[in-house]
Structure formats: structure tokens, C-alpha cells
Amino acid sequence: MPKFDITTSIGVLGAGTMGQGIAQVAATAGHAVVLYDSSRTALENARSGLSAILQRQVDKKRMSQSSADGILGRINFAHDPYKFATCGLIIEAIVEDLAVKRNVYSQVESIVPPDCILASNTSSLPIAAIGASCDKPERMLGAHFFNPAPLMPLVEIIPGVATAADVVQATCRLIDRWGKTTVLAKDTPGFIVNRVARPFYGEALRLLEEGMADVATIDWAMKEIGGFRMGPFELMDFIGNDINYAVTETVFAAFFYDPRYRPSFTQKRLVEAGYLGRKTGRGHYDYRPGAENPAPRQDRPLGEQIFKRILAMLINEAADAVFWQIGSPEDIDQAMIKGVNYPKGLLQWADEIGLKTVLGQLEGLQKEYGEDRYRPSPLLRRKVRKGETFLSHG
Ligand SMILES: NC(=O)c1ccc[n+]([C@@H]2O[C@H](COP(=O)([O-])OP(=O)(O)OC[C@H]3O[C@@H](n4cnc5c(N)ncnc54)[C@H](O)[C@@H]3O)[C@@H](O)[C@H]2O)c1
Image (tube, rainbow, N blue to C red):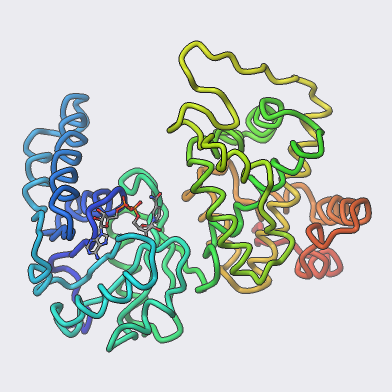
């Protein structure tokens, strides 16, 4: 019998937004699932929420009634953590607070079988720091799903300092079997996606602050010329400016205040004013009934300039993530396509545009502003010097 047998039941710790989605994914893959939360209300909401989601699938004829009943029937909504006693894998998705997580891990570890893997869905906490609260940190790792978990195919797998290699392999194998795409990421702030995506928001805010274009025009350029599904400002309003700003601030601090990740005053003021986005009716745009938003200036040369500058910054971030071995070039490209719906992998894009062109743009910006924010990744320079591409195009 393999040491880590996760064909058994799966435990999900925390029945909020992410826990519900992950429980649905595991139950859809045929596992018995124990979905535990310390709040009875959260459990009731999870049960009614999942039931409604599955019923909608049945109504739209995307799923049979018996499949929907089977999925819901495989989930045990538990208020007793001792139900985890037979689980082969626990995926934790509770509040993003290191002290609370560490406390919960030490409790759960005394309940689960000795070979049970413990995975955290944390977006921003170090896996090493969560693992350090475990008696057996070698069985703990990060498994970062994206919201909504049943729809988003990407899962970042993050080994901590102490994680055993067979724990990583067993977790990747299992989650791949669930139809997800797993990528390996180093235990560094933002892992792959939340690090590499920073300039999509940060550079767009910067262009706005410089007065190069308004919100609608920048969004138009990124969608119309870049092929992104949503513009940066629409996306910030959708995610919530409070959440998006908090991620930027966390990443900035965690990188010892590297100016490349500096947050924006414009977004900070929106948060302070309660303009959080769609959820409060106002953000970069006005969502109140009858509100009118300015139309974009559909100026193609301006749009090209906006798109090229944001893309160059994204490519630089992806190149630097390869340089620092945060992930492989292939995994970094997959992560951005499958985790945040980018129309193309950034490194593939760089290869197509030509690395010399991208480097030239960054050097131009660095010269213009004299800021470290625009420093080109050493890997980009090295590849240009050697005439190499990021990916092999065989
Ligand atoms: N929401 C997202 O878009 C998203 C995406 C990826 C990762 N994450 C991460 O997933 C985790 C959960 O996020 P969420 O948005 O689902 O949060 P949420 O607030 O919707 O749910 C958290 C749940 O945990 C429960 N909980 C809190 N403390 C507990 C404890 N000690 N024991 C048992 N249950 C407890 C709460 O009752 C709540 O139901 C966080 O680490 C977050 O960073 C969130």
C-alpha cells in the first residue's frame, strides 16, 4: 500500500467561499467529503448554497438529478472535527490569519491518521510558517485553488521548507485526477499568480495617475488590443478594491518594500472612501442603478501604447519569476492562462514579440523615470544576449 493513500475520504476545513467550492470539486470526483466548520451558520449556508448550485446545473440540463444528489450525498456537513479521523487529505480553507491557522493545524493533527496530508489554501501566508505548527511538517503543503474552485482549473502546489517530496507528488497526482491543472510554485509571496499579475493592476493604476488615459480607455485597450477578458479596473471592481489592495500591500511588504510592487494611492483612497467595487455599488466605475460611466477614447495608437507598457511589465515579472525559480516557464504560462484567464502565456507572448523589443521598452521606461520599478529582469537581458527564447518552439 502506498504511504500516502488519498483514495479515501477528503476533509475540507472551513465551509466558506473556498471550502464549499473545494468540497464540490472533491465530491464531484467521487470522494466522500467531510466539510467541517466551527460555525453552524456557515455549514447551513454551505449546504443550501451547494444545493442551489447543483440544482441550477440540473435545471440547465448540464447534470442529471441523480448526479447532483450523489454529489451532495457524498458531503458530510460536520460540526465535529473528529469526523476527520479517517481522511487521507485535509484541505484547509479557513480565515487568512496565521495564528488561527497554526492553532487549528495542531488540533487537527491530533485527530487525523498518521499519513494524512495537510494542505492549506492560503493565498498569502508562508507555507513554512503554517507547517512549523505541525508535529509532522513534512506532510504539510500549500494547495492554492482559485475562486470559484469548481470552475477555475488552476491549483498552485507549494512545498514548504519541510515538505516531503512524496507528499507533493501524491497531492499533484490526486488533484490532476480531479481534472485540475497543478503547477509547482516556490513558497514566496504571492506564489506564481498573485505575484506575476501585480503589474496588470499596478501599471494600469500608474497610467491613470499619470493622466495618460482614463479608466474606461485603459480597460478598452487591454480588452480590445490585448485580448484580456476584463480590463484591470473592471477586474479590481469585481475582486473588490479592498481585497486587491490588501494583496498588493501584503506582497509589497513581503518583498521588503521592493518599489516594483508599491501600492497605489488612488486605490487606497477608493478603499478608504468605501468605493470597494461592484459589492458596494461604486468603485472605479459607478454600478448604481441608472448610473452612466464615461465611454473609452477609442484611440488606437494610445491603446497600443497602454497595452504594450502593461504587457512589458507583466512579461518582466514573469521573467523574474523564472529567474528566481518560483516556477518553470511552462508552469508560469499555464498558471496565468488557467488561474486568471490570460489570453496567452506571458513568456510565450514575449517570445512572439521578441525579447529584444520587450527589453528595449523596459530600458526606455527605466531611463525615462529613473525608477527601479522598471528595472529589466537579469534573465531577460541574459536571454537577449544569448539570442535565446523562454520556451522551446520545436
Ligand atoms: N476567496 C477567495 O477568492 C480565495 C481564493 C484563493 C484562496 N483563498 C484563501 O482561502 C481561505 C478561505 O477563504 P474564503 O474566502 O473561503 O473565506 P470565508 O470567510 O468565506 O470562509 C472561511 C470559513 O472558515 C471558517 N472558520 C474560521 N475559523 C475557523 C476555525 N478556527 N475552525 C473552523 N472553521 C473556521 C469560518 O466560519 C468561515 O466559514 C483563506 O486562506 C484565503 O486566503 C481565498
